[in-house]
Length: 339
Image 1 (tube, helix red, strand yellow):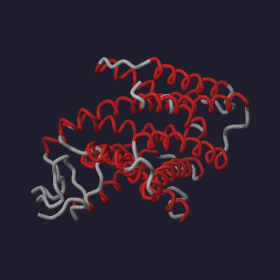
Image 2 (tube, one colour; image 1 turned 180 degrees about the vertical axis):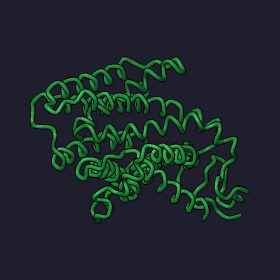
Image 3 (cartoon, rainbow, N blue to C red; image 1 turned 90 degrees about the vertical axis):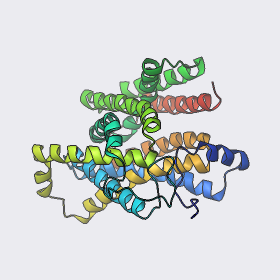
């Protein structure tokens, strides 16, 4: 039997993650590179999406989302065909491929994951619209309030309650967002509403993905594969009916090398970020992932302000951004301490 150690790390490998944390108390060189790769790719992804939507004024956010899904489909298909990854939690590297060389997973599994895929589609489309309509620093600040929506969803779905420490940190995050937004001279009610809708969609998606993953037997790659298979055709026909695909062919910057590079990198980083989050948590720890997530928000806000502007200097904005960052770090600390 061939060894399975060449398979890419998966999110469900909890035992391996715990053993890694116990054996490696300090970050290794590989861990440093992984953490830096996560932060860099996450910041760049937002920058590339923003550049396509605002700098080149590309009006079709759903076409970008469709392109990202096509890219994910191609990458996953190639990796699965060469047995570099698996789609299920108990599949080994040398297991035989499904009889259906296109689906790779049973049709009944796709039916089971359909509700999750629709939530994923809504989240992806709304996210692109949110990035378009608001400046990067405020987008990053308001996006931190996702944790509040997630807590509400957890309470209604499973009755889960949180400690005073967690509730206090979330309160600080919300206050920071309100303070920063109060003096945002580029305030746009529609854009702010879209960001909060994005937060709600993400909360529902995160609250559902664990249950669906366990019930379906799919790992993170399998779930992404199912989402792409289900959502890709839906988004394709929707874009076709709206005329977005035809209009894209007439987009004045379509053949510009700069625009093409931005689009390709946006698609590539969208897939890469899904994997590097898992790898960072596996190689390092949950604490490292949480801290990296907050650090990259600082860089995202800074680079976004420098490259795209839209947020004039104001004391309220600085205080609000700082409160949001502090609240995020406090929340990560409380959760990782089991409070």
